[in-house]
Length: 202
Image (tube, rainbow, N blue to C red; front, side):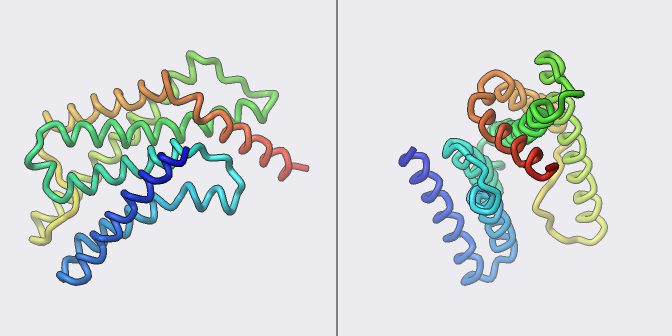
């Protein structure tokens, strides 16, 4: 548990260094990307402090790693390492799948009228991830169009139909990993959300 926290803090310090470098060197992209990444990595601590959610340290490391890998890609690894984009898509998709599973499981536990069979939960996670992936690709397309129209440099870019299909494939891989291995780390969180629903209802 301590090692997970140390790894998380180490990546956060590197992200903080990136923001500091952007401020000194006058690079808005580094400042914006690094600041957003830091805010995302702080979400587990904020949820645990404000809502008393029992977030596993592995979950914090999971979120921080996904964001950290994307930032490294944006700093040049997407160009120099072919498979880096696939890795970050799988990691990001696994986070979306984890959030979708946690919400569905909490509702299932909370309501006597709603029962979500395991097979349907599997399909549900895939649908959520694929839908988010399509929205993401549309966002990249829109940013490409904006860049061509205005001449501005955008933080995201689309690299053709083949790249889009591969992105969606690796999104599915991330969802599959969560459905097989992620439930053990998300069950306590779902149970706490259910209990909070019950307290708010009374």
